[in-house]
Length: 56
Image (cartoon, rainbow, N blue to C red):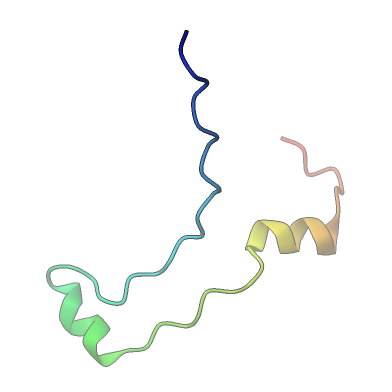
C-alpha cells in the first residue's frame, strides 16, 4: 500500500527580476523598477468595481 502524495506547495508570489538578460541588462543596470504592489490589479478591480456585468 502506498502512502498518499504530499500536499501541494502554497502558491508563490512572483518576484520581479533585478536584471534583464541580453541587451536589456544595460537598461536595468541604470533604472529602478517600481516595487510590486501588495494587491494585484485583478483583486483591486474586483474590490473597487465589484461585478458590474463584466462577464464575458
